[in-house]
Length: 178
Image (cartoon, rainbow, N blue to C red):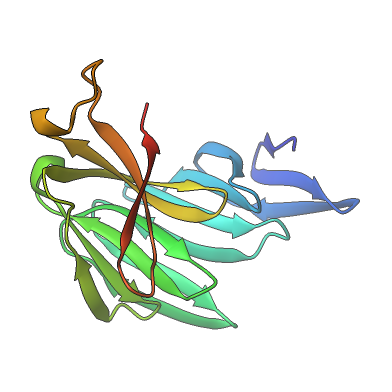
């Protein structure tokens, strides 16, 4: 996918040009299987992270500095504040956010919210691990965890990817994180 940035962000989808008129774009790229990620500056020069579907419809956005999250669901706009926001990912299928919160990454927590910002539950880190970051792999939300010395393999690697079941909070160990 070729994405062009000028006074707008443009790409081609199904033979048609999709254009989002937006200023102060820092980054625009394809994200995962079916999204476009745009990082831009707002009026006070804070970074806004936006995720669009390939037809140019905004799915969700967030501003880490302010903690403001906006979710677009069936033409309804839901916005809410997440205190101490580090990172956030959205599961469209189940309309849930997986959110990493905390003052520092090393002692962060993972909470799951519905699409209007209500807290559903907290995810506990696996024993001997701490949460490090959120990522996506083929539209599945994953949590990168750092293990202590007990969890290191024979090469000293101790960072692992865990997938999360957003309905239950269950973590499933997947693979080493690089």
